Length: 244
Length: 244
DNA sequence: CGTAGTATTGAAACGGATCAATATCTGTGG
DNA sequence: CCACAGATATTGATCCGTTTCAATACTACG
Image (tube, rainbow over all chains, first blue to last red):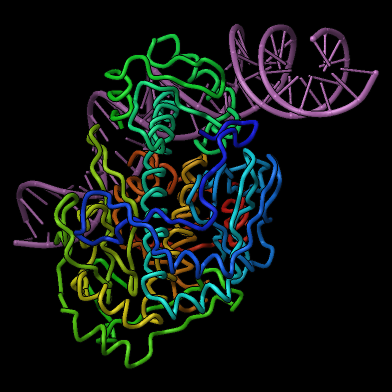
């Protein structure tokens, strides 16, 4: 659980450890393959570990992209500030997620710590060299990026929903699915602010606030605090999530 | 130019040819690198060429994913039909684009030809084998998927716009940028229907229709036909596109 | 040249954005 | 440990643009 005030339960791993997904193969069942020990050592040998406090900026959009990062614990947000002054969060990145998306050598988004985070910082040129040496390693990254693409496509579907409550429900559902334990009775940790949720869901802060209020009033979700949600009516919750 | 009625100007290439993008390196300037001749031959040796007419379905969502495809001319759309009955187009795929996104061995979307198309169909297992043999080749694919991720993130920003005219303008801008020639005076080919545009932009068909009417009325864009747009006021067009 | 699919246009209603006032939280320093 | 201040969130009222429903027009293909 990534609490707001930092990593209460320290993350065990000290080396990059990637939860792989299939690139599109039939190897089925959401297979969770980690890198081999040798590969982890290889990556670790070129990576630097960094620890950051909430709000720390990891990099700014349009600056020269020299590193790729692996989140080793905590939550970060990747966003862009639009000309209109609005902020759009492209993604929240959790443990094991890779980030550092760039174009023409410059980062596409600004990335900032939401909670305290631990990162592995990997020089891009060295990583690229490793990729050519070790096809398996590169394949893990290919799978990771493919997974990010799938998530982005799902997220686009969320953004086309008209109802704010539905979007928020889908967001909570997404957070819940990240939980390793399928303990669907426990509380969902919501490490980000309502404002961050709004920026991610393409809603105003007020709409998110009203949506959470509506979910509470309809007795579908309860909030022990703003950062701890609990599904109290699973049936109606799933129905709402599926009403796309 | 991919016209509605098919490939008027036949596509020259007979082998897969990938327009590469940087994975995030500093190798700058939107570098367009193609596969080496040897790599193209390697891919061609395991690929099958297919030619399809408009409306032909290439694969259905949730079916077993056995191939990855490279679009060798024409336009296809990747979509999902939601429980509500609405259709959401995740992406339009043009020449040189790769598609076949899967999860747990099953395709995520349904893919259908918009115009007449030529495809290279590549068996997934053999491609995966090639990837491990040839890190450079795999890297081209990694770049392609990374590019698709960037596009999906941009598209998410489009979807958060309130104004239909702005979304349509951004869509036309996207189509224009695909044109090889920077001849910004020529017409933009719009191979898909208004309904497809709506499904892609998260709008109703009526909203798209009214938006194109508004763009015409405001003398920003003219439509020689429904499938040929022309920017007549570049200044106001770019301003509208940037008003995010 | 007809017909089915596609697109346009109008009117009403819904839902979120916005503006504004107030309340609550968080973390810092006394 | 408590008080305080700035940031974050809630709640209310109004406005605006899209959706929806409905009728009509267009266009592409056989």
